[in-house]
Each structure stands twice: as C-alpha cells, then as structure tokens.
Image (cartoon, rainbow, N blue to C red; front, side, top):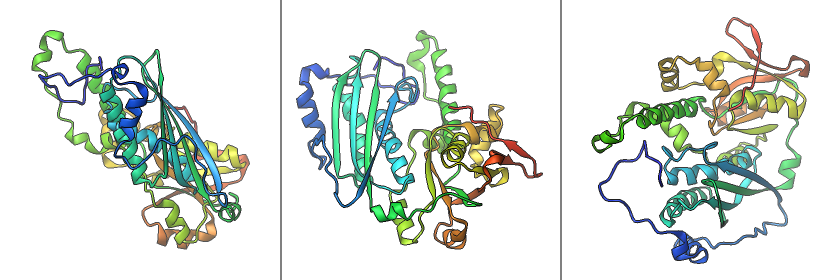
Length: 349
C-alpha cells in the first residue's frame, strides 16, 4: 500500500506485491479458501426448524477504519465481529458469514490474504458453518460488506419478555477504551506525517506499550462466543439486547425509542478502565464524554427482567448493572452521584 505506516515496523526489503490481475479472481478465491476448512458457498440453507435472522454491515476506508495504522489481519477479524455482535445481542447463534470486498488497484493479493486470515480466524472462533467471499473493483480504496446470519429456536424468541417497568440495564465490560485507543493512533499518525522525508531513514517506531490495553480494545476487540449458551444454561432470556458500536449514549437512546421506555443510567456505575481515564486526562477530554459518545466499544447492553436479578448476578458476576428502565416520559437520563438527572445526548461517532 502507498500509505506510510505508523504501527508497522520498517524493513529494508520491500515485500513481494502480486497484482490480483496476475492471478485472476477465481484463482485467488480458490487459494484463499484452500486449507481453511471452508468452501465458498454463497447460499446458506439453515435449519428449517429454527428462526433465522440476518445482519448487514458496511465498513468504509477513511470512515470506519484507517489503514495507516490498522493491520489488515486485525481489520478482517474486527469486521467479522462487527456483524456477529448484533446476532449475539439478540441471542441468535451465528451460523454464516458472507463478505464482499471492494478493492482499488493499490491492493495486492498479499493484502487480501492478510485480511482474509483475520476473517477466517473469527469464523473459526465463532463456529461459523458457512463462509463466503466475493471480490469487486473499487475506485476509492477498500469497502467491506458483511452479512451475518444466525439461528435460534422460535420458542426461545417468542418467550422473551418485553422491556418494561424497572428492568435492569447491563453491559458486558468497560467502555470508552476503544475511543481512547483511536486517539492514540490518530495522534501518532499526525506526528508521523510531520516527519520530513529526509529523516525517514532514521525513523523509529514510537513505544506505545503503556497504551497496550486501549489500543487492543480498538484494533482487536473480542466477543465471548459462548454468551448465548450461557443465557440458555442460566434459563435467562434478556428482554432486549444491543451491540455497542456507536457509543453507550446512542445505544441507550435506541433502546428507549425502540421499546417506548425511559432509562436511567447511573454515572458511578459505568465501568471505565484506569487506562481510559489516564488517556482522557492526557488529552484533556472528559472521561464521561469518552464513555458515552466514544465508538467501537464492541460490548453488549442487555435488558434483564428485575425478577431475574439474583440469578443474573450469580450467573454473570462480571457483567455490570448500570441502570434501569423507567417511564417513557422521563426519557433517557444520566444520574449523577448527587442525584441530578441529565438528559443523555447522543452526538454520534
């Protein structure tokens, strides 16, 4: 690729670059699937006795990711999770993944292999049965289209309670870390681009080890592939579930709008990692802003019936209860430790 890399080590020997046209699309697809255990099946039949749902995602270079500092293998893995997450949130078991890659001429076959390696790793980790890939031409960089399909027993879906009353709002991990990790990468990119060409030969990668956690949360997030099974084993069905990618504030407002409820989120209950707070202080950003409006958290928000509180706390000790539903006229509120109620504003990401 033509971009100057921030996160990759320099090398005196340029790696081999094989143009896709030299191999041909069909041959490249054959090589990509060779030895993976998957065949390139474009159609997923599924189990006729199960209820099936599909999730569609589109990730655009320059909007959803920056290849200056995002390794292609990490991007492939993360793009798969981007579509799998909403299935898990709805308590569907993922079964199929379908990718369409739109590529400009600057991408070589080696780049596609690297991206595909991450995708296959995610597919295997999440027990995907059907994986497919299509390649298209693009005039402007890289675009990744993903469709994920999942299944669930219709009785399980039908028995899910509706969000109501003072049901509990829970999230599966700390938030804001990915957004702070993105700030580290953007800052290093700006610094890197200021280096004169005459000094590039002596350039050394910056030591970012103290930002390891927040960088990992942005570049290589993880999802527990057993979350649906755990709910089943605990005999708990969430009243609602969401995959947090555009910030906690946007997710809470979506919950209220979709189900016609209000919500109260308690500020002191929101889990925020120490490294997130340290980075926010370093760049003079309010930590709460990062937690509420940062993106790419890749965590789940579940609404759990209040009657399941004790069982849920026992079966899911690492999940944080951050608030509860309330009357719709209250709206979405952030409650401070002093008891002040502030309307939640979702500013986007």
